[in-house]
Image (cartoon, rainbow, N blue to C red; front, side):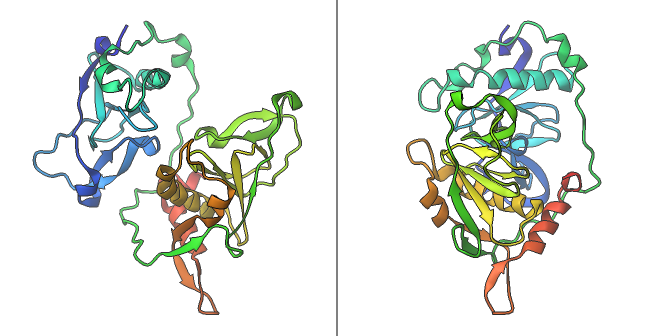
Length: 313
């Protein structure tokens, strides 16, 4: 069975996000992002824009996250190089999620400038049948009491801070362990991955780093908050805050680093420890009693708490 047997394939809205007008009350804009269901923001719907329906599947055709398929929970428009799949027959959400996962597993077959997905997407093979466990899986759906935040972040007064500054973070590198040094255990082992909060496996080595820190992997500077003690490979840099950082502030800063740094780094140009120390990030700021700008921790915490599902963190 192939994609074309199950889905109509559309070429998307082919819009440029940078040329759109952002609006908190606008329509979802889906790009080639692998986070947040592919949604990078909301834009004003203008005449002539091709709008796709809630329940359609978006499939990025390029970039580092090609075939990061998502089921959209609202009507939306798309960027360029994003295809839209619509089932030819009625399909439950859980069945769509299964096919999204199946599509992602085909990523290794394609590349952005080699064997491109757009030429072959209709012919990608999918399982003939959906396994019975898909229907019996106990998927817990979290609810939130928070409403979507309609206020667009005003970054005009944010200030730049250097990650390795003595008032910001102590930056250290992880410690590599050969596979013969450990077995399965309970300690998270953080590696250079952009999945599963950076955790590649659980090992039986005692934790070498305390929790409540940020980890930055070297290949794409993908940043995660680590709440618990862990081990990390030498492909990961650890950011220990020199200020009172809680999980909300950490998640805010991680989002800023991921948004601003991911495109700068790759396997050939890695974000090593000195690069991480020199990294500059713009954050909400306020003046302290000495008249110096410092990160506005209260603002960052309250912002994260105000987001949908921020009350579930």
